[in-house]
Image (cartoon, rainbow, N blue to C red; front, side, top):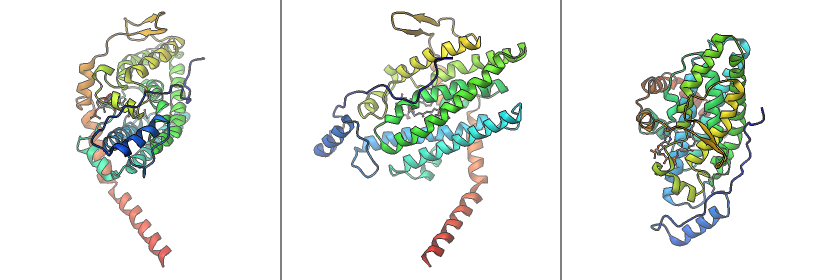
Length: 333
Ligand code: 3HC
């Protein structure tokens, strides 16, 4: 299989325009010059308030996606078909927890506390990726998630290694390396199913049918309906648009599906020689917006699980805080 993912970033990004005239013009000009020169902005540097706000929004939503993403996979750990698969899945779910932690830390450097972010998630104010509001019905869904969902996540996150905010960019370097492992293990599990018994192959195709379109939705609304993209490109928070990344994902994934002998569930999918990529069918944007509004099949289940985990595990946070207080008072004595 030649076409796989790379953690290299290949594209420079858009030019910077003045966008926040209410800010001190000198500070703004210096900030914009630094962004234009591809310098990282660090936590103590001056930044426009709108930059801080949109970064906090994006990073915290990204963090929430990582930890909510543990739920659909976590419930398959005890049911994984072998010890090897169990160990891999356990490691993967732990990785996602780690990604959430790096990202919450990166968002905290912008001045919002972890508690505030978690509260926003639990109260429904903050979003998390639509993809995690779909159920995992069979073992093949876990393979499909690794292959497609982690594959889409890498496509989205590799450019974020060069996002303009230093702590976010640095967190992404490690996250991308781990996501790359996640994608490969998913593809390997899918390969085994696709080459297995007729029943296993049927399961693989069924999971592919159900996860294909939601994976394309992960990249967000089409560019013409994406309120944040233009500004985020100018600030070099985002380095590529939603549609550019979605197209790249389709182009890289279709040959992978062909290699597996699976059929992409899109009758309109067709290679377009002129554009050097695939044309694909219309995404059901009504479904996307409904799932963003938490009307997905398992949205309530996900948030209930998160809230319960927060309440039931309060003793862990309290014990850790008490331990830290004791350690500090001993160190001070
Ligand atoms: N799910 C939920 N909400 C989504 C969404 C999705 N798939 N795509 C877009 N939205 C929301 C946006 O958050 C925004 O709402 P807001 O203004 O209230 O925040 C609104 O829809 C309009 O979308 P925009 O395109 O204007 O928003 P952005 O410029 O922020 O782009 C994004 C959306 C591409 C998701 C971008 O925020 C991004 O790149 N985020 C970082 C990556 C990320 O969050 N990935 C989550 C994937 S899962 C994951 O990484 C876990 C891994 O283990 C698999």
